[in-house]
Length: 150
Ligand code: AMP
Image (cartoon, rainbow, N blue to C red; front, side):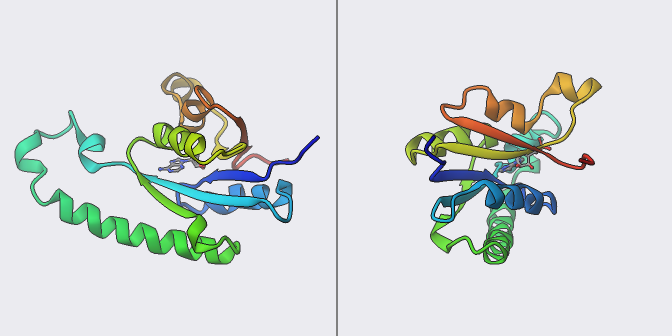
């Protein structure tokens, strides 16, 4: 069976990202391309329905740009730690599952690797990023269990 040569690793830039990346490196062929993808959600998406639109969102653009810079730096440090070349580090904007699907399709990704927590109760009903990515993915998806003793 051919191995995966083009892999997308979805990272949320929390400390969990390292667990997901370690697993990716374990299973990836030494000459496979690993792309790290972080999706920055627009702030007005996150807060819509919670605070009134017009007044609350003035100045949000600046804050978002500043946050984007900090996220870029975090991604660069993670890429450095795991020897991922800078042209394989991607910050996308939008909804995580949608952007991950779009990137995977446009870049012929063969495997998406994503972290997942054991989902129970309300979390199970509400879903998770991993669930959303799994549904509708056009390639294989590996979900790496986080925080579970093995
Ligand atoms: P969550 O469902 O938010 O707990 O996230 C579980 C996993 O989904 C993380 O370990 C990442 O692999 C991925 N993920 C969550 N948020 C993002 C994001 N904004 N961009 C890329 N991947 C993400």
